[in-house]
Image (cartoon, rainbow, N blue to C red):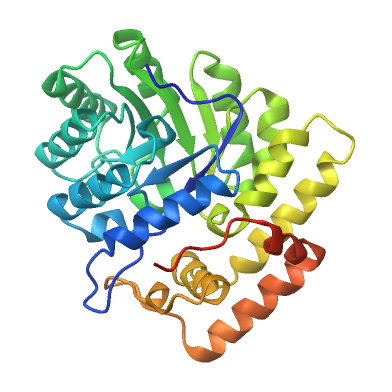
Length: 313
């Protein structure tokens, strides 16, 4: 049974699009392989960074099939399946399980706001009952800034009580260290991931599982270095350098900025494409973003030359 490594740094993968704004499945597969080659412990497909909720269920299924067909180990993947419609979440989850991916990242249904804890419990309960597969490992996705539907401690407790073998983890993208720390301390039986490298070292020191990060698309090699040295004296310097890059990129909308940087790093033009309503950065913004990234990266840019070449075929 695939299980998440502890500790781990997983990359929330971007999704490359072609000129018609359809998913470029072959390019996505190459990108996942590149991320794993740069030291990522695993890759999350179809999360927020991957523009998941801008795609249909059939598009998301095709993307997963392409990645797995390229030879990527399904044990290295977590697949985002959370949708507003329960039936869509069930279909995507069943598809992932059939493909051999057992780890599922699940947003709460996010269209209706201020819903009750009972309502959210019913949503996750219905998902697990409908799928009916003992091998499923659910990672609850707490991202209140984006979803506006928080996942409470009480809800996690209820779900673990009923499904102790199926609730495997929690991605905390609240950006609130106090909340992340509380989740780590309260739920030792599951993997608690921070949603940013900003908290990677603190999370590891507190006993958490690591992080699942968007900016690891461009920093996975540095994050992997910190992961391997987090108990060494140089860990704090590595953490400071890593967060410096994150802070530089955060000056612009995250997904367009990361796609602009990927285009600059790989010279693959289709990285500039985003599915509406997201919009690419203006040329002046792109230049500023690249300059900020290079300044924050400093000497770390030299390491790019020794890492896996980005396959353009």
